[in-house]
Amino acid sequence: MKNKKQTSSPSSYLKYFFVTIFLLKLIPYSLNAQSISFSIEAPETVVENEPFQVRFILNNANGSQFHAPSTSGIEMLFPPENAVSRSNFNGKISHTHTGTYRAIKKGNVSFGKASIQANGKTFYTQAFSIKVLPADSPSSKNQRNSNKIFVRPILSSTSVFHQETVSLAYKLYFSDINIQIGEIKIPKHNGFTEYEIKDPSLGKISQERYNGRNYYTATIRKSLLIPQKTGLLTIPKGEFNFTVPTKQAMRDSEDMFFGISSTSYINKKIYSQPFSINVKALPLPQPNSFKNALGTFSVNSTIIADKKIKTDEAFTIKLTIKGSGNLNLLTAPDIILPEDFDTFEPKITSNTSINLNSIEGTRTIEYYVIPRNEGEFKIPSILFSYFDPKEKKYKTSQTKEHIIKVLKGENSKVSTPNALATGITFSDKDIAYLITQSKKSSIPFIFSSAFYFIGLILLVLSILLYTFLILKDKIRSSSPSKNALKISRKKLKDAEIYLLDKRYDEYYESLLTAIQSYLTNKFLLDNNKMNKLEIENNLIQNKIPTDYIKSLLEIIDQISFTRFAPNTSSEIRKDLLEQSKTLISNIESITNR
Image 1 (tube, one colour):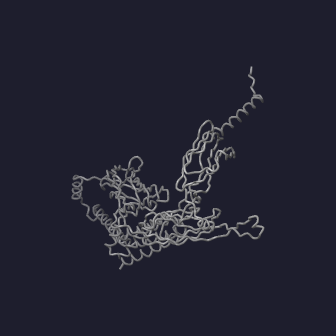
Image 2: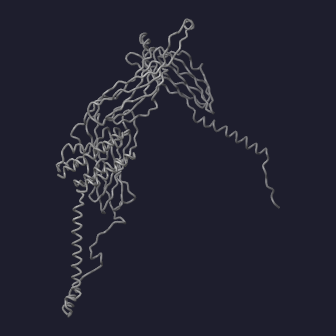
Image 3: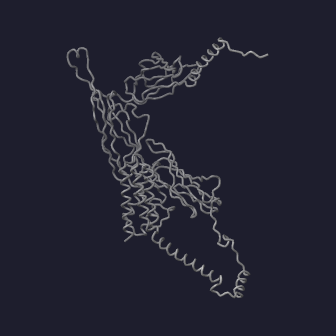
């Protein structure tokens, strides 16, 4: 006998429906209960004896039993308990109390904690204080009503070292809060690398006393500057456009009787004042391990490899520089490796944040290394020198030494003697046998196998000698020194193509390779040990003029700086390319005299 299939009745479906709806209704309440907050909104600065408002806001709940905060130096004009508003927008509930106050003394006034009951719990605001500016004199008030407006460039310092960070803010001062900001033309900061700071406080209106008057203020731009030249660097004026309100005079007796006046808006263009920064050269002598780093830093290194290090297989030496200063402009420190190790152009990455004082974070440099022979090797400490502008002196940090064991890789080639490679062995008996046989032979020597054997050897030797002479001639004609210019020009051509295609990473790579390959091939510099000091000493030994050497080192520095600097123009990159071409040609012409 078959069982009958059970079916749900309509009433059971309705029951499940209402239970589901009930549970869904509970979800927002549970979520809101977890995100209840009680906070305040208040001005940072007010003027003495002028009214201002403070809002006490409860989010995601309806509140009761509100208690206003205690105050010091404050007169309450309208209590927040009597000014209550509630809203419910898309399920988000807010409950707000608004109090009106007046500061009765200048300086700082304080508010205690406000409290409110919600969902059976008590919530509190944080205590806070407000800065109170002195009231304007009657003459200053009249001037304030004249709607004066101007922009001030504010610097953290007007005298810094080369490569030292300096903060710049453009601050707007105005008398009427109803102005509208239009087009802004920030001046070019020539001679500086600039990093614009995206700050949530930009555009926030506050009040400030300046030259005996109270103004509304708003910071409209913040940036961090790093000077790339020494001397007195001047920033020209900036241009700022605003729409400002202006009151029109009463037109007739009817307007005068009713006190009617109208407000119109006019466009107003103002300019910030130009300013100068004195950039001082860094003191001499500089440590050999100094790479234009300014600030405070620490360094450490680690070895990264897949399990075991083997010959002909790459591993990584990872150098991490941590601190604050001109981090984004740091170049890779020199690394000393055993002679049996090959290394390549390091990979450089940055993880930094930019604030109004400096660039903070880490800069990671990864050196890819391939050992050629097995054994135990020592990786010496990496030296990193920087200049501390606060203490005005050079400091040097260093990493720890690493001892590594290199095993023989699977693809390593093992050189063996020819005899072992061919499997041929000889003994005294074999030689004696050949001599005895030759004595007993009655065949003329000219027809003997020995004659043909000797002839074959002479033929092979002749071919080898001829090949050697040809190869020697080719090697002589294609020596690295003679091909240095050709190789360099090919890389410069590649850089020019990358520049036109706006492939800037490849452009810098080719430009730097063109210079390095020329120096390596022309002057037999070791690419693994190439640094500014080695380049300078080598070129001096080869009697290259001092001004050429100085120009070459400056070009290398400019490549390093502009490579990681934002907003580098195409003209600067093109100039670097042309300077490199000219300088290499000039050095080539001198060495070929």
